[in-house]
Length: 257
Image (cartoon, rainbow, N blue to C red; front, side, top):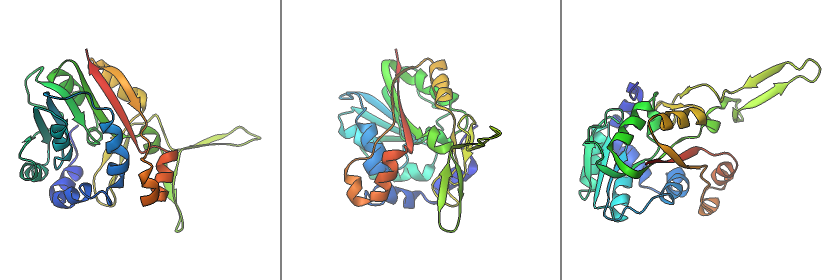
């Protein structure tokens, strides 16, 4: 199943707003002080290489990869509005409107594929893994991040005073009767993942992600629960505290042998 209409419309209608957000370190702290540093720390040597960013958005990762020495940095995104912004902002890179479930490049054409918080916009990740495996050269890697299955297994509850996310086992001492809040093993659709009336994402158990990746032919090289940078403690202490205790994202580094 492709990215649903709600998510597609969000990135079409609010492309300029979203691009401005991710380019402002003070606003996009989850990117600037958490996910991006962790992803960039896992980059292989891409000097002189041909690289692809899947779900490139407004192109920030594509230009970063180019500036790390990539000979050719290509970005794809299903949003034509995002691609327009990326092309106008970073002419040093190459951009295409393209669905990540139907990547239209020749076999063995990239030395490295990167994807930041994009794969979870589709329900079935298998096609993405299969296409990325096909277009990668041998002994090359695919680095991607997604919503953390532990975090998104939680149920949202709350009151006028508190907003609560819970993954919990409740067991009566006398009867041993068990009730569960949350569901780790279910494939779950997260509604309004970026705030009210925004986009939808999908989450599933880590084992299911790993199985889909290895079924496509990949080896799992690294699995990383990112930690926030210490700088975030001064900027947004509550966000730092939260991300230091419970991860929001998960990073996979896969390899095609």
